[in-house]
Length: 139
Image 1: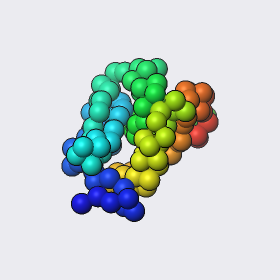
Image 2 (image 1 turned 90 degrees about the vertical axis):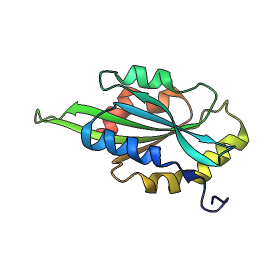
Image 3 (image 1 turned 135 degrees about the horizontal axis):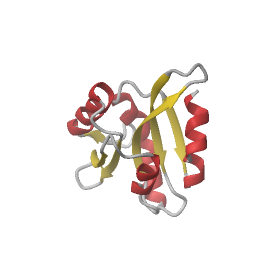
Image 4 (image 1 turned 30 degrees about the vertical axis):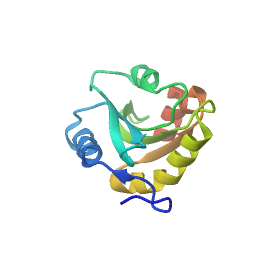
């Protein structure tokens, strides 16, 4: 099923929830975690469409790694309403070394399962994924 070279398996629910976010905008964000016992990536939290970026950032654990998808709405300089789907690899400095390695080695395989990611960020602390960073990467 899963091995060190290919990373963790991906639970079907991860792909389904991502498709719902992408096509129907059912969620503002999705946070995923690796379940080491099941050896797969699973959905950890879902953010309602009414929630904002601060709610999303507050949903990430301070000392554990996670993958996250955030649907960012913004207005361009031409005054057009747009949206970009961000993939964020959250790997705080305070998390376990084993966890950081596991998330790093599984990231590419997991991302390949989610078709439609437009921007990728790697963050080790909240300043690396602040709203100013998101805005600058969206344009």
